[in-house]
Length: 246
View 1 (spheres, rainbow, N blue to C red):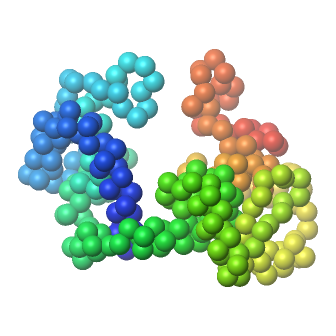
View 2 (cartoon, rainbow, N blue to C red; view 1 turned 90 degrees about the vertical axis):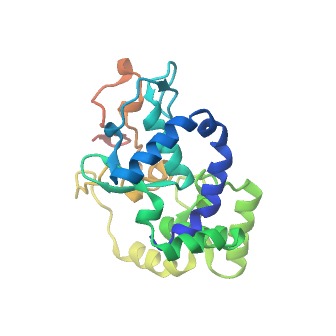
């Protein structure tokens, strides 16, 4: 929650990006906000709409309820937030869920300060970084800007290059983790393919960057739910890896 102000530049970008969409659905958005104001947190199913639009996941014909699409757009721009999750998301007005001090901080925060702080959060969340990550810094950064950020931290002694045996992709490691990595290399014996087995939830943070998972663990993380039905072999949430299928 305390990082809420740091993402204000992202919300500003979405406000520009979705301005036209929200203008076209202004009546729907007003009705959604009015109900959240009057009734408090509500799930998407609480809103009925015969109007279908192109949602984020629709490929061809419009399939998404206009109210559901509007809720997602309002969440992107910071008007509403997910208040809680049971088996579904409940939405509420941001000003009712975000502490007032954080809202004030978001309004006044310097964009450069927010972007720099968010970049540091990114480095500490991922620990091992590559320049090809489209989520680099959780910002829209050019390749030149990414290289500049890495170079600056290498010159300051905060980051070091990391070569992975058999992998062409260049990685970078937080310098403070180097001793831990070297100690692990000295003391860990090779783990046999049959175990031990570690189970992770499908959206675990370790899986954020699938290319990194493939390079470091030889695990090609693919959800068959995103494949055409005729190409599925094991089921919606089966994951294929170089060692087999999970």
